[in-house]
Amino acid sequence: MGRLFGTDGVRGVANADLTAEMALGLSVAAAHVLAEAGTFEGHRPVAVVGRDPRASGEFLEAAVVAGLASAGVDVLRVGVLPTPAVAHLTGALDADLGVMLSASHNPMPDNGIKFFARGGHKLADELEDRIETTYRSHASGEPWDRPTGAGVGRVRPYEEGFDAYVAHLIGALPNRLDGLKVVIDGAHGAAARVSPEAFARAGAEVVTIGTDPDGLNINDGYGSTHLDRLQAAVVEHRADLGIAHDGDADRCLAVDATGREVDGDQILAVLALAMREAGELRGDAVVGTVMSNLGFKLAMRREGVELVQTAVGDRYVLEEMKTRGYALGGEQSGHVIVLDHATTGDGTLTGLLLAARVAATGRTLADLAAVMERLPQVLVNVPDVDKSRVASSADLAAAVSEAERELGETGRVLLRPSGTEPLVRVMVEAADIEQARSVAGRLADAVKSALG
Image (cartoon, rainbow, N blue to C red):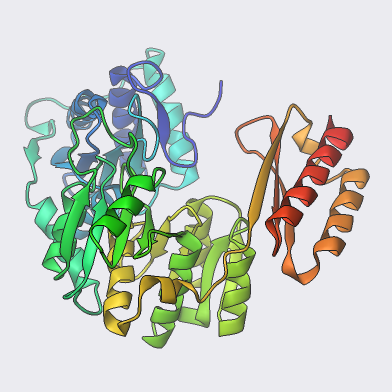
C-alpha cells in the first residue's frame, strides 16, 4: 500500500480517494500523534483550520473539525483563506497545529489535507508517517481514548483571521504601492478576497479577474497556470503589472505592462537584488532548484549572488534555507519563500514585494526582470523506460557528455527520473531554441536506447 502523504500533504479526488471518513480519521490521528509527542502538554490544545473555495472543502472541513474536536482539540475555523494565511495564523495564535484543505493548482474535483506544526511549519516526515500508521490502526478497528464531557473540543469561527493576515502582509512591505495600477488574477481561489484587499490597502489601484469563486470554478481558465486572460487584462487596462495566484495562493507569477510573463526565476532575481540592497539577503545567496533557468544562475553570478540549488520541490528549498540560514528561495513555478515573513511560499506576499520594488525604483517590471535573460528551455518526457538506471548507464553518460560539450558555457543538460511516473525527464537549455530542441531530441532517443 502506497504512502498517503506526498510532498504536499494528502491529495486525491474528493469523495473518491479523499473521503470524509479519511479526513476525520487523519485529523484524529494527527491529534493523537502530536499529543504523544508532547505538543499539547500542560495546556488545552488548539488548531487553526482553513480551506480554499472548492465545494468539497465544505464537507471535508466539517469532517476535519469533527475529528479534531472529538479528540479533545479546540478548533478555530478561519474559513476560506490562502495556505500561507493558515500557516501564519497557526504561528501568530500560538496554535498547536494548523490544517489546510486545498489541492492547490489541481482541478476542482481534487482536494487535499495539509497539516502544519506549531509555528506554522510543515510537519516532519517522521510525524506524517506516525499519523498515517495511527490512522490505519484506527481504521482497522483499534480503539482509541475518546474524551467526554468538558474534555471534548470546542469549535468557533475566527473571523478576525482575514484582517490579521492582511495586516501581516502590509507590515512586511518596505514601502507603499501608491501610483501603481495592478491587475490581480485570484484563480477563483483562496486569494480572491485577500490579495485585492492587501494591494488596495497598500495603495495600489486594483483591477481584478478570477475573483468570483463559486465552489466549482477554481483554477478553471484563470490563475498562474492560465496566464492568457491576465496578460490581456494588463494590456487592456494599461496596468503597470499583473499578479497571478494558484488555487491556494502559495505561488505567484507576474505579467509586465506589455503582457509578457515574468516567471518565478525572474521574480527571485528581482527580489534577491532588492533584499541585498536592503541588507536582508543573508549570505548573499538565494536558494533555487536544479530546474532553475541557467539564465538565472548566470545573472546571479554576474551580480555576486550565490545560487544554491536543491532537488525539485519547495519543501527541499525550504529545508536548505533553514539549514543554512538563508532568507530567500523558490522555484520557477512561482513558489517563493521569504523566510523572515513566511514559513511557506506566499503568493500574495511575493506579489506585494515585487510591486513594492517597482514602486520604490520607479522602473518598469520589464526593466527589473531584464536583470536575467531567460534562456530557451526544452523539456521532453521519455516514458516506459527503466528510470532507476539513469545514473548508472555508461551509454547515457556518454550521450550527456557529448551534449554538454556541444552546448558549452551557454547551455545545460539535466536528466531526471520522475518521482511519480515511470519516465525520465530530459531538460536542455541553450542560447538558441532550435539547438535546445535538437539536443533534447537526441538525448531523448539516447534515453530510449539505453534504458528502454
